[in-house]
Structure formats: structure tokens, C-alpha cells
Length: 363
Length: 37
Image (cartoon, rainbow over all chains, first blue to last red; front, top):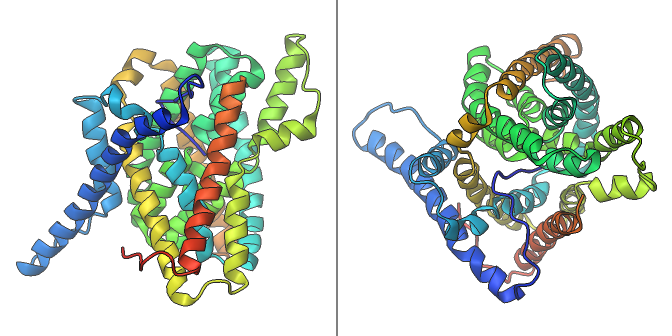
């Protein structure tokens, strides 16, 4: 879940209409960059076909992210666009809910169950690795906790949720967010390349991306860069991982409350519900409706296409919100901890998937 | 988590679910033209 460097806190003294109008320029920018990515993909493919050239098929996903990265890291995103650009998180979640039509509920439960086993292992490994690395490299304990939460569950939104729960400094959470975002951007390029080099199946790659890429937007994009089917599996694995956010943040909140003698979480069930990503329920509902035959076949295709349009805006937003200059300002140590930890997590999850594939013939 | 942030998370998630369900309903009842890709 996610995930924005440009976290917009609504200003409640503004009328709703004015707040909505402020979103339009940024949303138009997302659409323009996304469409430019799509047109670039089609133009290159068309040129190759017309001139009988075997040009590599570079997906619109990569173009949209690249164009967004160029804007964010050259001219920067002007303030008039920022509120609208931050809506990419909304498009991501709406896209995931709509993607539910492409899953039968039985498959979701079966694949989700398999993913859950991997998620449990991934959570444990990530937390242990990040905690040890943070300790060895002398990061503050709260920054270490934030990095562990961010890398184990779902990136920036987990860090934002945990910041309040463990009473961390703004500086620590900015560090952790910047590191997680930069590593997510790197994963986008590295994961598909490694997947192709190893000849991973769509299912295996999707599961790997969903387990090891931190932000939901980046995990979805990494899957989509590999294949359409891999994107489906990446979203499912990542959504399963997101669903555990409440438990992990609650665990850290209780730990820090005890350590700093603060008042602990009173109502744990309410806390878990508050932190639970509600769009997962929407995804399950749409999948259930699809399984029950509520939609005709052409309607299923239309809803799947709506999901793709929502993701198009998301991918443009992923590029636009990644600012490498901001990361340089934050210092190198958190990035080193994040990078070493992420490499270890990516290697271990890949080994797990390989192991399961060989032993149980799962993928 | 401060109240505005909690509200933002709440509204964003539910709002995304609501928007997606409305879009799916529009397709279901043929109120949205064919969606190409």
C-alpha cells in the first residue's frame, strides 16, 4: 500500500469543491505522462513493424515511470501539480479492487493461502535482517524499526502508520521513506532483468515481486514489466503482505510503548481494524461478484481495462514522486542498510520460491 | 496516528473501493460505453 513522498494532509478548512479542483492539474499530468508512455510503446512497435526491425518491446509501464522520473528529477513537480500527483495512490487502490474481476474467489483464497506462508517467512526474515543491520551500522533504534517495518510489509504507508504508533521523529521517517522509495525505483529495473535471466515463470516472478518489492505501486509495476499474468500474481502476493500491516505495526507499537513506558495500545482489535487496508476487502468483493457470474464476459474485459487505466496513472505517479536529490540530502547510511537488507531479502525470497518450485512443483 | 492522517487513510481506502464498485456497476448495467485498452 502506499506510498507517496508527497504526502498530502488534507486541509479541512478548505471547502470540498476547492480541494477537488486542486487535484485536477496533477491528475491531468498523471494522465498525460501515462498516455505518453502508452503512445511511445505503440510508436516504437509500429516503427519496428513498418521497417521490419526487431525492436525490443519496452512496455508503457517503463516509459511512464521513466518520463515521470525525468520530470521529477529535472524540473521537479511544481506545487500546483502536487496534490493531484498524490492521487496516484487512490488510482492504485481502485485499480487493485477492479483487478479482482480477473480472479476467481477460490483461486484468490488458494493463491493467497500459499502467499501467506511465504509472507510469514518474508516478514520474519526482513525484520531480523533490518534490525541486525541497523544495529551494526549504528542507526537509531526507531529508524531501524521504521526501516524494518517498511521493508517487511508495504513501504511508505507502513512507515507512516508506524511513525505515529511508535512515536518516531519526522526526520527518521523521512529517512526511511526516502530509502524505501529509492530502493523501490531500483527494484523496478533490477527485478524483471533478473527474472528474465533466470527464466522465472509468470507465477514465480509475480510472487517474488509481490514478496520482495516494498511499495505496492512498484511491486505492481515490476510485475507488469514482466508480463500481464505476472502483474496479477504480484498484486495478489503484495495484497496478502499488505493485509498483515496491522499485526506488525501493533507489535512494534507494543514494544516501543513498553520500552519508553508510554501508554500502550488500549483496544488491540480496533487498532488492527484501523490499520487494515480496506481496499483488500473491495478486491475480495469484486472477485466474489465475478466468481458468482454477475458480469458477462465482455463486461469482465471492460472492467479489467478500467483497472489498466487506473494503473497507467499509478505508474506515472511512481516516477513523479521519486526524487533522487532528496535522497542524497538524507545521507547514505539508511540507504546502505536498506540496500543491503533488500538484497538479502530479495535473494532469500527468490531461493524460497525456487525451493518451493523444485520441491512441491508449485509454479 | 494523528486524526487527519487517520481520516485520510480511511477516506482514501474506502473512497477507492467505492469508486471501483461504482465503475463496475456502471459497466454491469451498460451505463458505460465499451472500455478499450
